[in-house]
Length: 231
Ligand SMILES: *Cc1c(COP(=O)(O)O)cnc(C)c1O
Image (cartoon, rainbow, N blue to C red; front, side, top):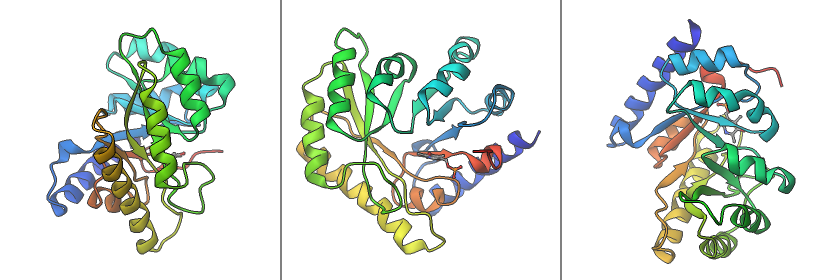
């Protein structure tokens, strides 16, 4: 089973990267990014030990995960792709965490949908640290304003930041992108002690070891687990 072997190999590489960085392997969560993968493959990943899945489209995730979650207790599902306002309601009901919050309008929309929740919906703010990516807050000021907005809604809890590094073979710009995310998190944490901003979601198949060295607590791995996906 190719997926089981791939998961094992990634877990070993995570452990080694943690050891190099003087970190504990338990500090880094492994997400299987299952976008464009069908249910049998997602099931194989679950059998291989993956409990956290990431999807980039609301509709696709709703189709694949609505029944899956009941049949696979302990499954956690995060949204990692851009969210349209008109899908916010489905998203708030389906996802455990929305990692890709990139504008204040969305915070208000999600906040208005979650006011009566016992357990708040966790959100991460997406920070635009590389030119290749289209989405994300552009600077620390706008991240701070977003955090202030999130404070207004009891149904939301801000859990940290996420980013995508530039797509390049060069290490320096990738590392700089991850450093910028960690620095922004530290700055926000100092200004917003009400939030526990523990989550730094950074690192994908081709750069997760660098991300771990720079403090990642959640790596989002698609291709290296599932193989190339048909777009
Ligand atoms: C697709 C995607 C990933 C996974 O990318 P791989 O290179 O296949 O590991 C991670 N994060 C986001 C936001 C994505 O859209």
